[in-house]
Image 1 (cartoon, helix red, strand yellow):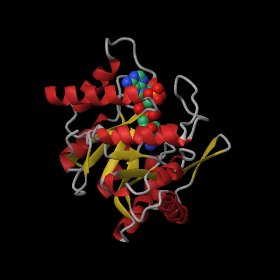
Image 2 (cartoon, rainbow, N blue to C red):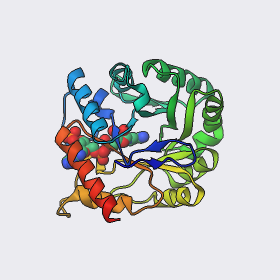
Image 3 (cartoon, protein in one colour):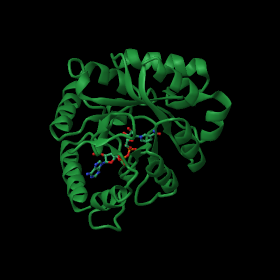
Length: 262
Ligand SMILES: NC(=O)c1ccc[n+]([C@@H]2O[C@H](COP(=O)([O-])OP(=O)(O)OC[C@H]3O[C@@H](n4cnc5c(N)ncnc54)[C@H](OP(=O)(O)O)[C@@H]3O)[C@@H](O)[C@H]2O)c1
């Protein structure tokens, strides 16, 4: 896949990234079907296929169960071939999410992610959202803390995975990027994408396929999703979660078709 600039960070991202919730967590998730976590071999095969198809961006988070730790092990010897996006602010244990945005917790969480991912720098670090994006930024100075860690060389880009337009817009004024939801059912964060396009900020898309709840109103809902998303000039990369190699191949092929037509 042809790489594209990720805002003004100097990084180049593939138009599709691989989401890794399903590498590490199968409880408290909203996918249409239950699933078993992949074996190490299955996860390694999926990463090798993603790389062969030209994907260079992986998305993970402390809230995705064992995802960060597993990536740390699986990427030994190939860390430099990937860009890794992780998050701070949400913890998941015993089936429950808990949120904390204090400076102490953010610093601790970033150090723990560096250790788990077995790396000295994390390429993109986002605030995970509990829905109170503006309050979390204003009350705790959460992005200032991430930006300090960026200045210390532990992060290369900072931003938010937002759930609100106001939070996405505020975060883009203080950081490099936002991860927003955009799919055939949910388009209310388009204003954040437009702002990013106008101000040279990066945009990652989450839940592009509505977390697998694909609409039967379209002949090919994956293709229709990509047509909607890649029509937005502000979009840098679309993070799709899959454990299925055939889905990964066909997603890349459809994304390339849509990009070539655009
Ligand atoms: N920051 C946040 O708060 C947040 C929230 C949600 C997600 N994310 C990130 O965004 C990523 C993607 O979000 P998501 O996993 O919720 O949703 P998604 O990418 O919209 O959908 C993933 C689901 O779609 C299925 N799928 C993938 N390709 C398919 C295809 N070609 N045909 C049919 N089904 C297909 C996958 O199942 P198979 O495994 O069977 O392919 C999976 O269950 C996550 O992995 C995570 O990295 C972030």
